[in-house]
Image (cartoon, rainbow, N blue to C red):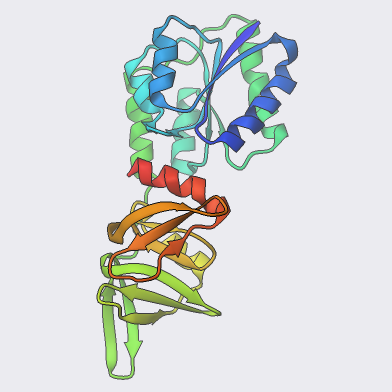
Length: 258
């Protein structure tokens, strides 16, 4: 029997992983699922010793590294992560497994084959020690880039520089995209929505739906809205912004991580 601890905060992602893992290991699998650092710590500190851990990095209450930094883990870990090249380089040097989201069944099976072989051979698992934690944390720190701090706004009267921090939200209108700044002024910006999203700091801005990106510093309230959506109140605005159904869970997670 293989005892597996699954750390994944999103229900749909957890359901998919659980089905794939159960299909792979069959009746040999004893799987325990948690969504938070807290619950993972309670499980491990209760004396449970998994043979394998499959873990996302960002959980409901913070980074999974908080768990591995506090609790001694004597099992190999496969990180299922959306983080890109810098972090993956760190995984390669530490011997810790990773699967990059979005992943295929084949990709997951490949890394599971490696760890199933490791378990069968009774080989010592890769250690999550202080040196490894420092390397991974450093890699996460490098996994950032420079985001736009100001936009050049062209007006008939001249060129206007608009700070990103002063923008309450962005809103598309057909093929046009506008920045709404504090005070209610509306400015045309020369970007498409998808390209703009890549330019903004994800710690400050979140895309609520196909046509709106909000600045967290101007959110005053959020409340439930019909259709599994959220209604977002923005400082100085009469009309609320509404999350799309597919974005609601991600937005909740984003606000909890700030």
